[in-house]
Amino acid sequence: MTDKIFWRDMYRKNIEASVTECDGSGIILDRTVFYPTGGGQPNDTGKILFDGQAVNIVDVKKSGEDVLHIPDTSVNIARGTKVYGEIDWERRYSHMRHHSAIHVIDGILAARHGSKALLTGGQIYQDHARIDINMEDFSREFVESLLKECNTFMLEGHSIYQREITRDEALSIPNLSRTEPGRELIRSLETVRTIVIEGLDEQADGGTHVNNTKEIGSISLTGIQSKGKRNKRIEFRLV
Ligand SMILES: [Zn+2]
Image (cartoon, rainbow, N blue to C red; front, top):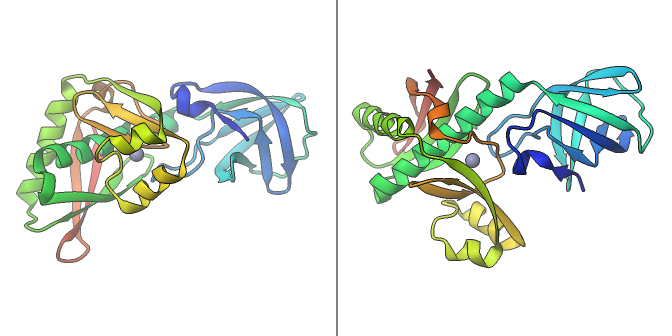
């Protein structure tokens, strides 16, 4: 099982590790800082250095309990080889800011607009993100005022951190996941990793986040698409 350092130390940019497996599909290490695609957050990219050589890592995927690093050219590294890995920090940090922004929007929606609207999904890209909202009386004014509330909250400088809790504790916290597949996942785990936004929200989550809402910046609305009567897709950038 790959030790997922990016869960505990979300600002770590590099790592020394050992190869546990390497074949045509990619490289598996005993520990990694490379985030694999998941939960709406894209994979990291970067490079892995070994024996005086370097390979670019262009994709990273979960593979069971392991993390698979996919290089741009095929390599053969012997098991046990010590390597040095480094992620493209600019790309990752942008993902972290966007991911935290989505949690702030989700938290404000749930805390202040409770039964009125539900965030049903989100996707992060390198320089923008989108969320899907399900609500009865949708209007552009509502979205604009929601994002304004989020921006005010973020400027206040609330800390963001991760916790690891037991399944029983997780199940005792209401709304730790707001979707049924999320709740089902919690029931299947022994320990649950959560992301806390102080004074707002706690969600079961596998992503990487910034330390403080101030680092997110300000959310700027770039588009609204209708995906049905109740379902709207909102696109934003961080400025
Ligand atoms: Zn998340």
